[in-house]
Length: 419
Image (cartoon, helix red, strand yellow):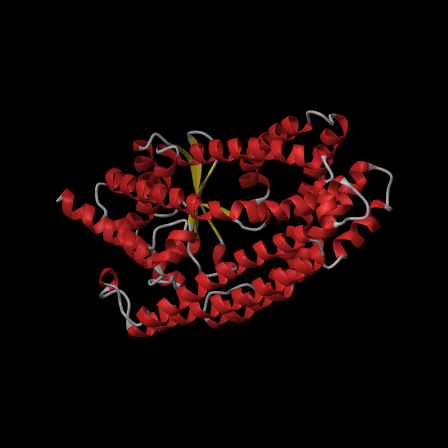
C-alpha cells in the first residue's frame, strides 16, 4: 500500500469514525433526556410510549452500527485488499465489447451488494419492525418485492448503462456533456412514468372518492396554491407497514396526490389537508425546482471533473491496478468523490431544513390555522416512534427536517402571532 492509498484510507476511516461519534453522542443525549415529555407533546404521549420510542431509536441505531461496520469493512477490503484489481481483470476478459463489459461490470456489483444486504433487511423487517408493531409484510410479499425490485433495477441499469456507455464510446471527447444531458432527460422521464408504470407494480392505487368530501376539500385548498389536482389516490401501504405517509407525483402544475391508507385511518381531514398544504408549499416556493437546478449545476461541474480525471491514469497509479479500464476508474472515482463530498453534508441539510420551515409557514397561511399541521406532526411522530430528543449537533449535521419538537414549537408561535 503506497502513501496515497494510506492517506485516502485514513481520510475515509476518519469520516466513518466521525459519523459513529455523532451517532454515539445522539444516543447519549437520548439517554439523558429521553424520559422527559417535551411540552409540545404534553397530554399526547405517556411514559410507556416515550419509553417505546426511546427503545426503538436505540435498537435501530445499534443495528445501524452493525450494518455500517459490515458495509465499510467489505468496501475497504474490496478496494484496498486487491479484490477490485482481481475483479477488474476477470471482467475485462469476458468480452471484447465495451458496452457489454461495462454492463456486466456494474450489474454484477449491484447484485452482489443486494445479496449482501438481504440478511440485514430481513432482520430489520421481521425482527425490529415486528417487535415494535410496524411490520405487516409476509415472507411471500417480501420475496415478491425483492424479485420485482431486482428485475426493475436490472432493466433500468441496462437501459441507462447501454446508452451511457454508447455515448462514452462514440464521443470520446464530448461524452460528458451528452451524458449529463441524457441523465437529466431520463430522470425527468422517470419522474413522469414512475407513478403510472413502476409504483403500481408494488401497490394498489384506489381513488378516494368514497371518502366523505375529502377529495373536494383537497382540490379546493390546492387550487389556492396554484396546483391542479388530477386525482387523489390512496395506496394499500398497510400490507407492508403501519408507518404513515403522503406524497405528490407529477411534473408541473398538474399533480396526483397519494395518501397511505394508514394515514387516512389515523388523521382527520383537516390534518391531512395541512400535511398536503406543506407539500404544496415546496412547489409554490419552488424548492423542488431549485433543488433540480442546483443538483444539475453540481452534476454538470462534477461530470466534467470526472471526465478530466477518467482521461488520465492517476487513479490506476494511486490504487496500483494492473489493468487500466474505464470501469475500474469509475469505481475508484466514486470512492474518492464520497470522501471529497462529505464536508458538504451539513450544507445540504441546512438548506433542506430551511425549505421545510418555509413549507410549514406556507401551509399555515393557506390553511389559515397552524394547529392542524401541529396536530398532524404529533400524530406522525407518535405513529412512527420518532426520536423527540435528537442531539442538536447531530440534527444540524444530518437532519433534512427540523426536529419535530422544534417544528411544533414554531407552529404554535406563529399561531399566537396570528391571533
